[in-house]
Image: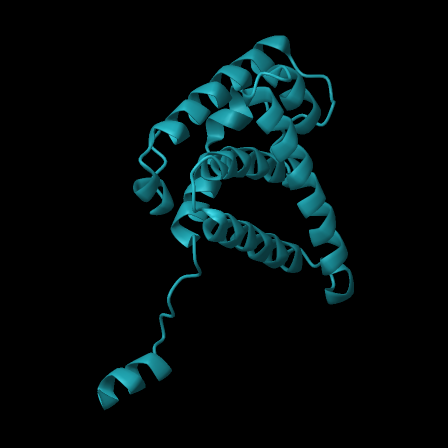
Length: 174
């Protein structure tokens, strides 16, 4: 028993934060080069944020539809905030304004989540939501937009099809 105490106290590999595996999968999907090539999503900090927000929104929508997932929704969102906080600090944003930037990012995520939720509920055209949120209203080639919309529909179908326990373990098949 004493060994277990010392092992926990001096463990060099702390347990990952809740929902880490799922969040890492979200980021991996968002970083797939095809989004930036065939989909012409800008390969910039903003474009990468928009892709993470898109994939994260699809996963959050899935979790919202499953009963009893409130804590997982909170944990996944907290994992996103921690990642964005770390990313901002990495690029040199000072401590005094990190909170302000995080607030803006959370507002952006909330807006995107609402737009994608409406699109998949049939209350908005997905291509319009993507043009506004993924491409930030910049001119986008119609073929690239159609490609992105089709891929997002497919990705949403994939996320919806993964058994919940496997999704929570980080499985997003591609």
